[in-house]
Amino acid sequence: MAGNFERNLDTGKKAELFAEKYFQGKNISYQDVRDCPEHRKIDVDYLTDKLGSVEVKCNYVDAMYGRKGKYFWVELFVGEKDGWWRFCKADHFLFNDTESRGIIIENSPALRRFINNAIEDGDHSPHGNNRIDRVKDKRYGGYITVVNMRCYFEDLNTAGIPYVNIIKRKTV
Image 1 (cartoon, rainbow, N blue to C red):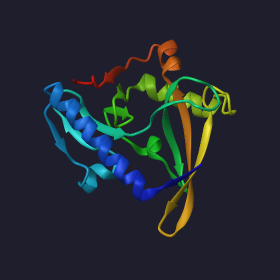
Image 2: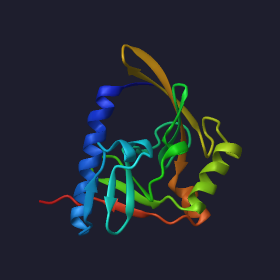
Image 3: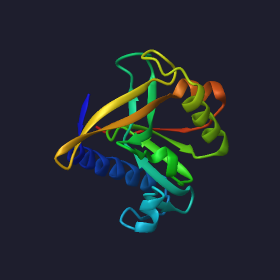
Image 4: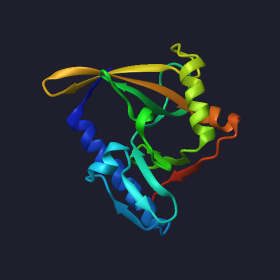
């Protein structure tokens, strides 16, 4: 599986527009801090009046291979560097697919324990609850490997980790 950094940036912009439309629809005041070095260092995209800080990720996926179901990716490594899971300090995550669906989930101690336990002790096999996906990503004239772990919504439900579904209704 290969990715492209420039295409990923474009997808990220669409994901952020999805988030802004969601904020506007829910009357959530927000400030875009994506270009602020202080917030970039802790992986925060927006400051809001109702959710606190929010990080937006375009990684809400329907599994096509391995275990079936909806999941989001937890980025563990980008090449030799830690992925966003290791350093993100946002109060909430907004995971979406840029088109019509997403979730908002609090970056709570319960979520952190759940994910960290899955990283340490989860079933990382191809059909496992916490499958590890390695994606080759073209960057700066070469390729790096991004390592992600799947986190299925069904498992969040079983663990009692709350989240809010976002569904963009089609208008006629």
